[in-house]
Length: 326
Picture 1 (spheres, rainbow, N blue to C red):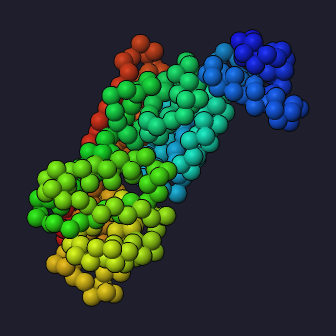
Picture 2 (picture 1 turned 30 degrees about the vertical axis):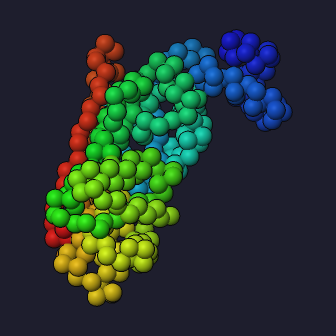
Picture 3 (picture 1 turned 180 degrees about the vertical axis):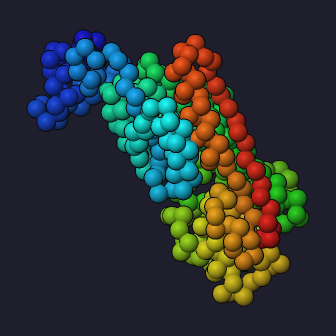
């Protein structure tokens, strides 16, 4: 706290008030102190007295969305395994807002969690600073690259997109499209779209049409099909960034008299329960949502049992589930 006070040019008492009781200081002063704290990777300790240095049995987990069934499955598996060992999840949702993620990470850090879990590898400098400075294990999940802050458990979203592009190219399609949701905000969906386009171009020499839609809902999938065909009527295969979008497009295709896959091939992502029960059954890319939850929980428990246990950077991969729509 003394270092934050020095950088902010205020007293330690003022730092304490600004971080723990922000309503007692001016907005200008609060922002100055918060900026200094973020730069230094400092989070106030909310555990009082002699317990201040102790770890709590809390695991902070930050996800983009609690309504997204991918993350719900991961959280469910994590919770079951960690609860059996006496740990509880403390869950925050940032709604694809990186500044909000930083605020949640800052708040969670102040409770001396036993571990922190964040989604993806794309964070603000402030978030990286806080996660790098924390003494507890930090796991970045649902993505993969070579440089995790601490440990990483997930898969390459770009590789998932490449798998879809390769699947279409291998079937001889020349005019294809990729429909992604919230590509500006969702870096993982954007990576899949980029991987799809790059792989299809490399394999066929042709450009894929990329369409960004505003949600992952059934209705958005219905509208997306009309938009794709209006722009590129010769399209014969469409990959979607979610199974619900793909299902909506299938309903719209049926109403339009298009046969699947004879007239139009459709590929989803997620392998949700609905995929296998569509008519025809939906081909999809399956991410390891349950496996991520299990691997994260196991890694946390191993690190807490033995602080010298090695860090991990696991790529769990994805799987093409080919059914009747491709």
